[in-house]
Length: 555
Image 1 (cartoon, rainbow, N blue to C red):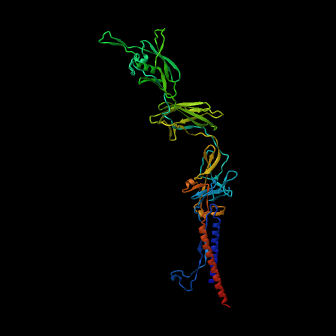
Image 2: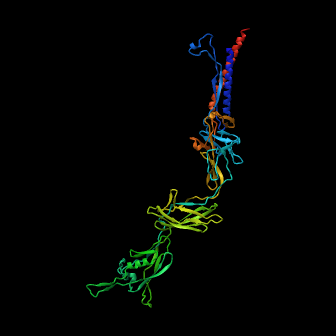
Image 3: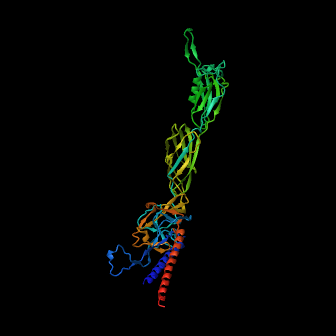
C-alpha cells in the first residue's frame, strides 16, 4: 500500500508542477500584452493518512507523529495586480491608468473592465477597445459642460464639431506710454534787447530806452503778427506810453505817466497769444507753446506806427526777429487689435493716444473701415500710475447682417494696467475676448480623463470624460480574455468614479500600461519548477523500482 502512496504522491507533484509550468508559460507568452497581470500558483498539502497502531491511546500521545502525507494540490492561481510600467506610444488614444481602477467598456448588453487602454476611434467617432467594445464615460454638451456621475454612455467625438463664434465684449490694454516723448514749440528772439551802453535790458526797462525801440514816441503803437498753434494768424498792436514826469518843482518831481516797460510788452504778447506764454530770459523774449505737440506758434513782423497820423509811414523794428529753437512734437501711440462681431467676422480696431499735457492723454477709437466709435482721456499721477479714465461705450455696426457690437476698452484688468514712465511706449492690446468660428482640429486626454478638443480658432472645450470602475475585491474579477474582466459576486458591487475623485489615480495619454511580468523571476521559477518536476518523476521511478523488487521476491 505504501508503495502505491509513493506513486500517487509523485503523480500529484507532477500534476501540480505541470500546472505551475503552464502558468509560467502563460506569463512569459504575455510579456508584451498590454495591461496583462501575471499569474502565480499557490500549492497546498493534500489530506494526511493517520498510521495509528491498534489499541494505542491517541489522547496520550503529545502529537500526531504517525500522519502520512498523500501529496500536493494546486490551491489557487492568483493574479499579481501590481502596476505595470508605462510605455510611451505618443498615440493620443492610447491611455494608461496610473493608480487604481479600471476602464469601463461595453457592448450594449454588458459592461466589462480592462486595464488595457489601447483604444481607437471607429468610423462613427466612438472610442472603442481593440475588440470593438465602446469605452464608457460622460459626453459633454455643445458648450463643453460635463455632468459626471450616474449612468455612463458610449464616449464619442463629433469630428465635424464647430466652436461657435463670440463677439468681443472686452479689449484689455496694458504697457507704457512714454512720458517724455512730446515737446512744446519754443520760439526765441535772435538778438537780445540792450541799452545804449550795451548792457542787457531787464523787465523794468522802459521800452523807449532799449536799442531796438529808440525813437519810439508816446502814443505810437508796436504792431506785429502772432501765428497761433493751428496756423491761424492775428494782427495786434501794443500802445506805447512814454514816461512823463512833472518836474516843475525840482525838489519834488512827480511821475505823471509811468511809461511802458519791457515787462508790459511781454505781458501783452502773452495775453494776445492764444496758445503760448512769453517770458524774458537773458534779455531775450522766449515764446513757449502752452500745448504739447506739433504747433505753428510764432511771432514776427514788428513795425512802429502813429495811429493819430494817417499819413505817417510805419517803420520796421530793427534787430527784432524770432526763430524756432524747439520744434513742437506730438507724443502719440497707436494700438491695433482685432475685434469680432456676432458672426465671427474680424474687424481691426485702431486706438490712437495723444499726450495732451503732463499726465494727461487723449485717445480716439475707430474701426479700420473709418467708423469713429469713441474717445476719452486717461490720467496718470506723478508716479506714472493710472488714476482715472473716461470713455464712451464703444459701439460699431459691422454690417453683413451682424448685430451692432458693443464692447469695453479696459485700461486696467487682469492684474495689468497702462503706465506712464519715461521710456519707450510699449502699450498694446494684451487680450480681447471675442473669437471666430473654430473647427475641431485635434484633441487630447488630460490627467483627469477629460477628452479636450482643440479648435482652429485657438479655443478648446471638454468633449467628454472617461469613467473609471472599481470593485471591492479586484482579485475576484473573472478573466474572459482579450484583457477583459467580468463582474461576479466574488468581486463585489461595481462603483463608478472619475480620476479626479480617486486619490493617487490619473490618466496618462499617449502611453500604455505594460505587462507586469518579471522575466527574471519567471525564468528562475521555471528552473525551480523543472527541478521539482524531475524530482517527483524520480520518486515515481524509485517507487517503481522498489515495487519491482517486491514482485521479484516470488521468483
